[in-house]
Every structure is written in C-alpha cells, then in structure tokens.
Length: 244
Length: 250
Image 1: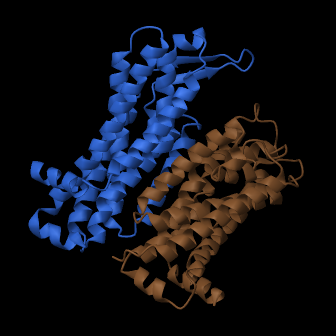
Image 2 (image 1 turned 45 degrees about the horizontal axis):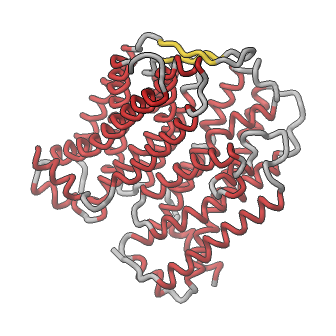
Image 3 (image 1 turned 180 degrees about the horizontal axis):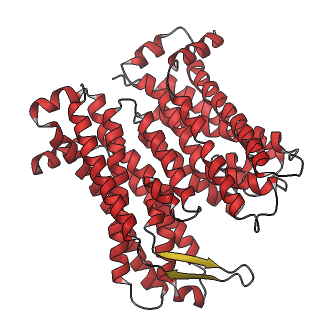
C-alpha cells in the first residue's frame, strides 16, 4: 500500500519541471565557485578542501534550504488546490502515508542533488587541474548532507502542510537557513534543524571533524524527523481540512 | 488608478503580507547589530561605511526572496480565486498590473526606509564618527529601491504569467544566488545579472589586510552607467511584462 502511495506521489509530479531547479542550483556555485577559487588561488591553499568550501558555503546556508522549501511547497500545493484534500483524506490509506510519501519524494530529490553536487565538484576539480587525490571524505560529506537535507524537508513539509500559501514557507526556509548560520557560528549547530545541512556537508571546515560527534548528528536528525512526522500525523488526524 | 491601488491593499488586508517582510528585515538587523556590538575605535570611525557596505550584501541574499514572496502573495490570490477571468472585465488589465506593482513597491520602499532608520539610529547610539552622511544615504535609498523594484517587477510578471508559483519562486532563489556570487567575481560581470546590481551599485569597497587583520572601507565613484542599464532594464521588463499580461489568455 505504501509503495502505491509513493507511486501516486511520483505520478503527481509527472512532467512537472520542479527537478529543473535542483539541476540548475548546484551548477551556479560549481561555475562561479570554481572561478572564484581560480582567482584566489594564492589565499585558498587547501586544494580540494578549499574548492569544496567555495562550492558549498553559500548554497548550504541560504539557497538549498530555500529551494527545498520551494519543492515542499509544491508537493503540498497539489493538495491545497482544486479541493484535493477531500480526495486525499478519503483515500483508503493511513494519513501517515500521505506525509511519509511526500517526505520520501522530497528526500529522494535531495539525494539526487547531493550526487549531482558531487559530480560537479569532481569535474570542477579536474578542470582546475588539482593534482592531489580526491578527498576520501567526499561520500561522507554528501551522505551527511543528504541526512541534514532530509531534516529540512521534514520541517518544510510540516510548514507547507499548515500554511496554505506557496511563498510563505519559502521565506521561512530562508530565515531558517540564515538562523542556521548563526547557530553554527555560536556552536549550537547540531541543535538547530536548518544547520544540520551545512554541518553535515562540512561547508565551513571540510578538513576537520564535524562540530559535534557523528552519533549526536544522526540522533538529532532522527529526532527532528520523528517530531515532524508525529506533528504532521497529528495535524492531519485532528484538524479538519480546508479544501478550496 | 488610486481606486485600483486601494483595492489591492483591501484584498490583502488580512493576509499579513508584511509578516514575512518584517521577519526577514528583523534577521538582517539582528545580523548587523551582532556585527557592530564589539567595534573598536578604528571601526567606529568608519561605521557609516561599514553599514553601507554590509546592507547591500545582506540585501543581495535576502531581498530577492522577499520580493519573490511578496509578488507571489499579491498575484497568487488572483490565480486561486480564478479572478483573472473576472477582473479584466471590470478594469483594464494594464491598470491591474500597475496597481499590483505599486502595492508591492510599497513594501520594498518600507524595507529600505526602515533599513536607513536602523542605520541612523544604530550609528548615533553606537557613536559612529561624524554625522550621518545624508548624501550617501540618499544614494543608498535610490539604488536599493531601484534594484528591489526591478526584481519585484520581474517576479510579478512571472507570478502573473505562471499559475504554478514554483517557477517564480525558483527563479527568485536561483537569481539571488547568482547575484550574491557575482559580487565576488571581477567587477563588470554583475552587470549581466539583474540580481547582481546590489553589488554593481555599491559605492563602498573593503580592503582587508591579511597581515594586520585590519579592515579599511573607502568610497568609490558611483557606477552611473550601471544605474542607466538598470533603469533601461526596468522599463523593458515593465513594457514587455505588462503587454504579455494584457495579451495572456485567461
């Protein structure tokens, strides 16, 4: 049954150009970040590590959360419009499936984006002529970035479930991303859901360890996703829908 | 026209459009005050320049998204209520377009004026050297307002033309990203990106000495040719966007 819900979710997105945004977004830092790296090669001496910072710094803090916000808003916009809530809530599936299917769909997009960021990073490194071997931590950065991104997805989906406007949750995602930057700077990154993305991707210090232990990172990520799932299920169960 | 504009504000009277604008402005102010609370004498001596350098940078990150959200909220009500079929039978479509733009521009103006008020109040409280540089603040008002309303206009055109609000919002986020990046690239490149004009029209530059770790700010001449290009871009987007909206099949 759950697999069918996910398939239904995929069908709703059929022919939607939403993936295009995720395709374009990482290209910008890849092109401009690499260019910036080339210009400042005297200051940035960490080779692959410096290049990684150039690629990820701005996107993790400000733009990936915002574009995830756009995607999550779109997933729920499909239900908010055309009286769709009536159909969704009377479908013979537990309400949790509705939210979980959307979460999986959004997280899958984040996973693909991370893979794309990795590919672009490797290509840029080759074009820059970096002669050191590729950093062995790269898969780890991308994976933890995916974990952090999934937390942002879970949270944004909750916001888009509650707020019927398309644009407001996107603005909130940007606010969250900026607050996340402050949280990381103050050392509380692991406690703030929007910081987990940049923390996981090691946007500011790719060479060293994470600001917190890996266990704590994963535990906090699971905790936030769990809280979001419980909130969404309770909301869907208790609140009457507004169809219009 | 006045009546159309009043109607726009009447439509959004309970939509609290200002909340997201206020929240982002609040973040900006917090960020800046966080940066100024431990300034030494050297930094206080160039405090005004510090503000005039930092605000355009923060604007490049935040204002394009504020503009995209504001434009989307103003235009989305018409899509949701299927009003674009009805409204052009009651008023010229061009007038609706202009009224919506002026309504959104009001929020952009409010943002810039509040920013300037924060700059002046914070500068006086913290004791920046000298009086507030009125001419520079007026330049800041003119340039920031022009860039913001041009971006708002583009967002409004997209939000009206596409029922799917994902497109304008994604353009806003990606554009803002490109604009921010263009500020770190060689000057001139920003002129090709609308969102990069916060950087193009910045008239304060920063010089950071790696050895002494001292930051020096200095004024540079205003890039009037860049401003001219921006005004032309505004006129083109306005004319093309308005005619596309008028000709659009509802």
